[in-house]
Image (cartoon, rainbow, N blue to C red; front, top):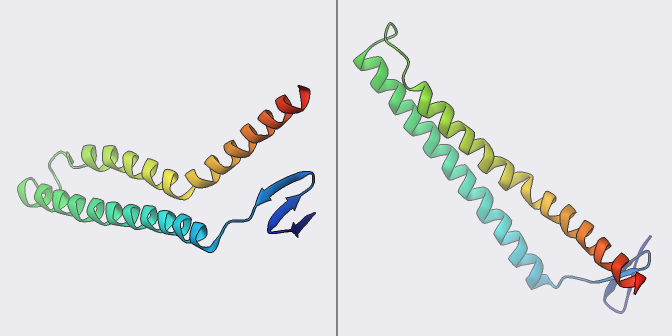
Length: 111
């Protein structure tokens, strides 16, 4: 159960300070910047690889070895990692933070 007591969010037996509007804005801005950076990366990936495919087509045609696949796949792996870091990373960090907090609280209660 979640309740607010004196500006604090109480969840079960733990107490968290509620984030101020400025703190929320800073966090939202960081997330937005990460998403914009990913979309820029995606756009550059598409444009450059389209250019490489065009060069391959113009120079060798469809009968030539499709060498453009090497940068397409290699860079695609990096782009996928960037996407996971951008869209799933914050949730993962939050889960890990909660786990570490629980460990620290358990250790503190043992003392």
